[in-house]
Length: 64
Image (cartoon, rainbow, N blue to C red; front, top):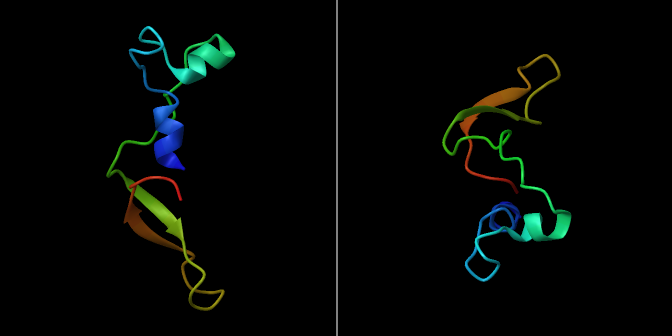
């Protein structure tokens, strides 16, 4: 899913160095909210009791 999302926002020579997103919506894609690969994140955890912490620390590696 993440790979497709990124590929649709990456320029190609076939489209005269425009992105598929740009060709479809006539606007440049906004990559401002894209997390940096390997950055620290909190991941929701369903293990443990309701009094335990609900998040564990992890690293950003992409979308599911």
